Amino acid sequence: MPQYREIVVVHKLLTAMAEHGISEDDMAKRIGLAPPVLADKLRGKSHLSLDELFSLADVLHFDAVDLVRTPDQG
Image (cartoon, rainbow, N blue to C red; front, side, top):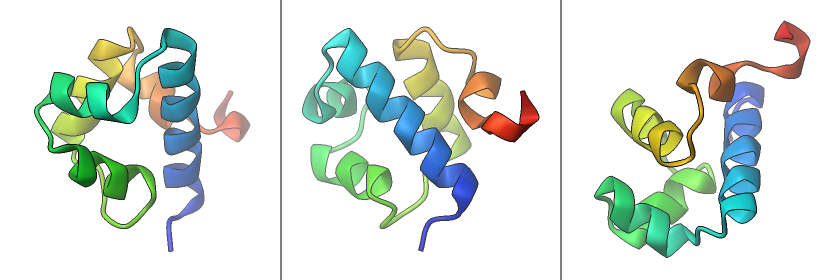
C-alpha cells in the first residue's frame, strides 16, 4: 500500500503529465523505462527510484524537491 508521500508525488506527476499532454507511454520512453514498468510505479505496485524521480522532474520542468514536498510542508 502506497504511503501518503508517494500518493502526493504520483498525483503531482500525473497532473503535470496531463497538463503537458504527456502520456504514460511517452513519459516511459523519455525516461528510459518500459511503459508497463512506469505504469506499475505510478500505481504503487513498485517504488520510483531517486534517479527516476529526477528524470521525471526534468521532463516536467519541476524541481524534484517540489515533487516530494507534501501540502503540510508548504
